[in-house]
Length: 447
Image 1 (tube, rainbow, N blue to C red):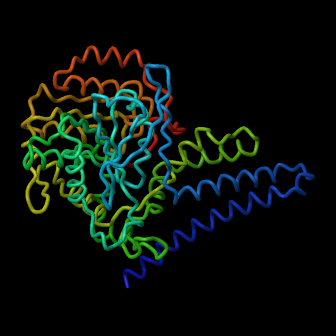
Image 2: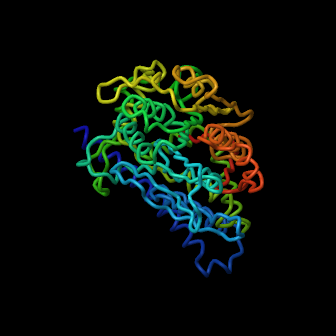
Image 3: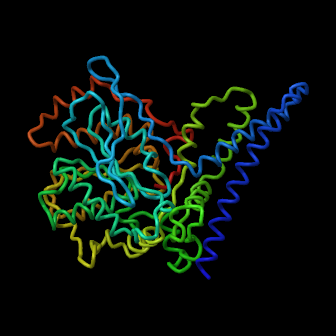
């Protein structure tokens, strides 16, 4: 009976989304009827503008955005096209490479671990774009759970950790891992897993950005929510079964549309204001296809389902039982000892105004890495930065990115960091690359 209820609920959400998209398209078509051009009343322009914004917004919720990485300017004065190529393909996520055409492989090899928390890996588009001039960039591209057949089995945080370990192993020991938010504790666990099972495969550096390594270090709305509800209540409230429309029919998931509702509710007033302004700009004719609103919300509204076991195991084991924070995390029944990490340089980055993963939660990783010399540990607290800003906003581009690259250079085998830094300064990072965030560096994107 529970499965039937889930299917009805899942399909009901999809029906509501479809209805709103249809209403927007209908309003746009009706208000654009040629005869109404003879009636110069602003209501028709507002109606058409409302319809365009509604149709676009609700249609984006089921579309995976393209990467659309702009060409990279080369030292020879030519633009080099960027190709997205799979390196390792798995049922629940791929390892992809951003190959820059007609350019030799860069000495800095970066694995950017994207979150699996409701948005696609393309949320990291501006982060990727900012790193490409100086690095060979690889990204974890997680799949939408609704498109994965039940026959592929489960996917929880232990499977996620093993995926990361496999990806790092595939790229080799000269890899520099950068994990953003949700995957930070699991990237730490994957590194510890390699340290114990295959020490030679450990990455060279591990940078953890705004992640809940110890959620109890500083309370936020996210940690309060996790502690307030029991696992039974959480499963009853948010877990549903994928409807018959998708390949993953019958799979239990935390639906992307339900996640989007919670994302928006955290900052509802600001989001409402942004959409009202967008409608008026459309009506006045001052909006454009590539404006800040469209760039941001085309990505923000594109959501993906998470497998139920991944979401529930994250809440239970990372937030409630604090298995990473207590160094009690296990994979396949075996304890993963973070203290076994000895040859990896560790850096943590936090935003002073981050209310998703508050300061203190991520830097806790340094105390857990008892086997890493203090000289190979680094931390940075970015003043005035919120959650989005520390990996994709202005704070990342102007302050954090150079620090991360310097950290990678300082720990590169046989490298001369001062020369690399001079080259990077001459190149001048792409300060305005990627999607702009109309909500600023402090916008609440739960990743």
